[in-house]
Image 1 (cartoon, rainbow, N blue to C red):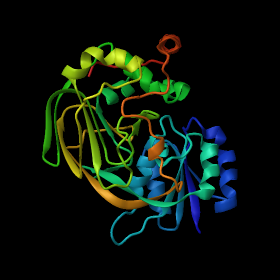
Image 2: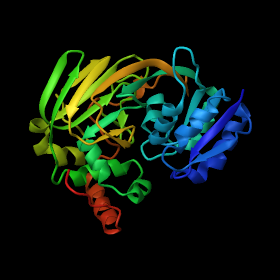
Image 3: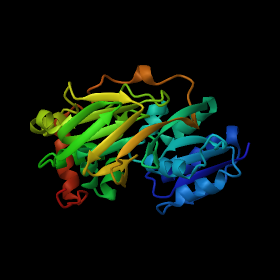
Length: 326
């Protein structure tokens, strides 16, 4: 087997990389390392290495995996290398959906028992997404945090950004249609996912979503139902029940919301469709679905007192970057 490793040099877990490679060695041997730091570099490396590798190990976050899948040659007449994903980012939501540990060394050790699994991707106006699309409030909240905050706080950074943005939450007009089902009006956020249901470092906004079922799942958060309770709901780490949820093979979006594909800034796509079973990823044999929480929890911390003290402490250290209102 010919294998190589693409590693994101800006990873907060970069110091763990030698131990990760050592844990992989019994199964994959000594892996040649290809560092990727600049935007687009991981995509170019994936395109080059796909011509000669059977296995491509990706060390980084969801954004690094996003670049890699957009560089892989996928199609009916082309078989891309199998991908092994090791968590090295802030959220690592794809890894969570695969049922792998969020710690990179632990995930590397689990790889000994993993087997190839065919997964879906999303076609977003010609750009592929691995885990999903955040458009609206979630994307605006993420933009309010500096890179230093994300590296210092880890997955909690997404919750901090959400609470800060909730002080004066923006709204947008949105029209979402999924297989002839329509939701439209003023909305705070739209989350579209055809693969994992985890967002922002382990908040299962779409716990029913499946990585390989050939369907996409959509969550719409209307302003009328959510705006008044947004800050309180986030501090309690929950989304209220009864929000519109749709499911199908394709979706159309009409909105000016800011958007992120797998955590990466991007124009909000006008159309999204499922690319069923188009790539292979090493995953544990047991499906993680049974371990997923109930549909409404969105975070791992139920104590709002220390949570707010942490926000204020980090803000005082200059971790919060102000941005113009959306």
